[in-house]
Length: 487
Image (cartoon, rainbow, N blue to C red; front, side, top):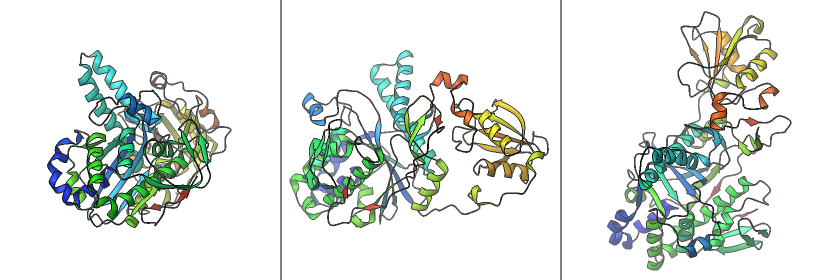
């Protein structure tokens, strides 16, 4: 939305008259550790926050707060997370949505819902800074930066894509951008009447503005697939908005262009290394049909932690493979360990040590039990005391060890590596928080490790439940002549 709004300004004479004003008044964020488009495309992380301030940190007025229908709760959750990939020639754009409740490994926190990566990291860092004597303003600025960095890294770890640029839009910004184009056309299969979001709409096509538009994209209660249906709502809304921004009626209306400029300046935060004007000029020939919206695959829509918290379970390997396919970088068989031939060995002759380097209590015991059930001998089982690891790995003395390859395959296609300190023929599995392979049923009991009790982490549990997978739906594009009807 931010990029397309600027695009509308750039391709008109109005934009060139006000370009300096736009550049000077955009809110920016620096030092986020972003990439540099080295892979032939610009990868943008766009997040929608539930912030009750504008892009410059100014509190919203009471009238503005009331118009949002978002309650009084103050938080920094990122309930809309979209990774947008644009080839350097600006010929197309693919927007990949990530469900807000996706349970992922967050740097510095461990397993958590991805929408909390920003807010939880920010609050932890803010409290630390205040205790160290920082002013409230200093603590707010530095902790916000830490929250953004944690979210950027979490998305990169999940998708395998390095984020090049960052765009953030608050609740008010969504309303202002929607109003600036005169509202957005949507279509509902059935009427809705849901008080939590304030969504009260008839069935059929309609044009939504302001708080009604916000309610439309925020509703997830009373929808058949919950957050996934909300994502579909957001995608069809953005597709319709893209079409509206690129239309001649918007580009030729000075009043709408003025509103767009004001909305962008007040409500959008961009990373300070991004020349948004130059980038927008690359998109001048972008057609609506070349803007597609996708959603990552979900392993279990109704996942649950051991503490009863509802989550969306995702498998990082599946997500990486899916995203790679979307962006034209499908891994080859040699890059995907799950496709290599499993060596034929006698499992009873292999003893496997299992070390837990994650924050999930009981994980090492569960994996060891799973291997024992497959006929492998049980070696040492306990917490990992070596250097920090970021990826679950099977180690052996040499790279051509068939036993290590067989164990890696048995645990879901794990990567293998060498450790010269291991005796010939021995195998060690080092478990990180990304582990998604088999465990025994006993691992879904309680968190017992000291690390977990200190951080309050909640391992995912599927004991006694049937996973509800949600494969990606058909792509949505911005080139249709009318809005697509959805739940």
